[in-house]
Length: 306
Image (cartoon, rainbow, N blue to C red; front, top):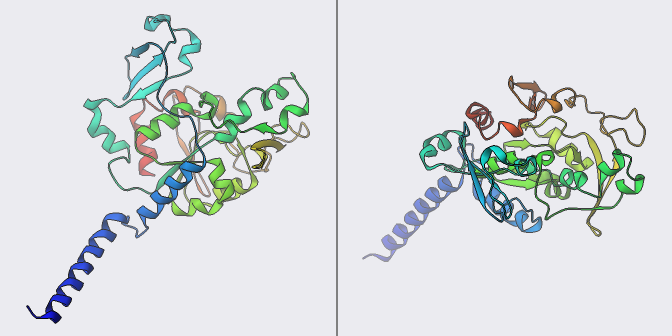
């Protein structure tokens, strides 16, 4: 076979492979999906966070309207579903139901390339821990409870830090980053076409600027971007700077953010008449969705389709 022909054939083959590879690793808008994934894999190694579905003790399965399997860990005791103590009810866990596979394709992103990311509120998780900011707000201690609070990397998310939303979005295939990645590298959000914010109540100025400048944000929980904190990464601690009636009682939102939607939406946890409200850089849910995020197919579709 002519050497020149062989060289041309090899070049054409490599070119075709490159085109196919580019198509497989890029979204329809031309953005590089593989680049996003590499960034997320690297960032996940930087900020470990305990949001697994694992627990200890007996498992209590429940039934109902959920589109996921809902279960509770009960320690060493097994409770009838109607007798589960309120302390157990606070920690819900979820699994996919095989019979709902097609539904998950409709409401999730785990079966396709995507360019969305949600933000785990690790700073808010830290603020609500003990000792922490809420010991000060409750009058149990002085301003020492607002300063140098160790970042709680290994704490499990709670109702206040969007535990159910984190678990459901992960099950549906959404990638995540934490406050820390955005604070250290605000430009990371530019890799994504859509940002899903949870109850990120306590954020840094870097994080606030990056989120409010992004053109497409779903503010899934009211009371986000409410108070300004400062982070010392050498000590791995946070300190409240401004907001939540500090350093003076008249200060509500620490950034004077005109789209603050804390009142009255934060306290509507039933979400019976939920709706999204449009603002300059996205949409805001008018209720706190932790009780419905695993049951409401329409809400999950709205999140995906926005």
